Image 1 (cartoon, rainbow, N blue to C red):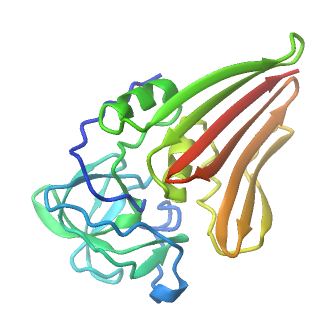
Image 2: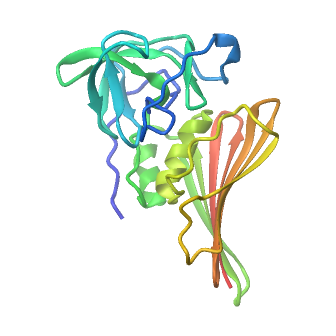
Length: 256
């Protein structure tokens, strides 16, 4: 497993995370603030640095709107200097509320959607969760990792629990997607929608009996996101919930 190195200067923002609905095909839509999902608008200092979390890269634009010219595409994991933070939510992209930060990239100054920028260095796919959290704790002491075993001798289980010092659902989802191999076919669930929704993986491998994402909402606010998969003799699940100002990711495996 690749160990993720973190060198983050202390910030005062809680992030909002990629510049498109899935960043595989960049789609950006603008709405009024009244229609936006709740997002953290804590100001970012002028010397803050944030990381690109968009899997296919984040667009750097000439001006602070989604229709201005593209100056560059900033790759996943790029560390950006924030010059002027946007304090208000002015748009939604892929169900994520946010605005356009003015940032510096490769000696260029432009604007990027802050919903796909994070205080946390984004993990590579299948990064060891324990090692990732240990690196996070150097800058974010409230991050934690725990592991427990249970079940029976014939049906053993293992549970990993990660607590992230953020209250942003999309941030927890994208980190969980990398740490625990949630298929990229699943986008971050829009907070607005049915109270209960089940999505099936359109690219489910033949060896899997099940690969699906379950979403629980209340009053157009996310309550729980669960990814589960099952195959002969094996099953696993990833559950994302909020605990106060922390996001909780639980990964459980069961062997038959």
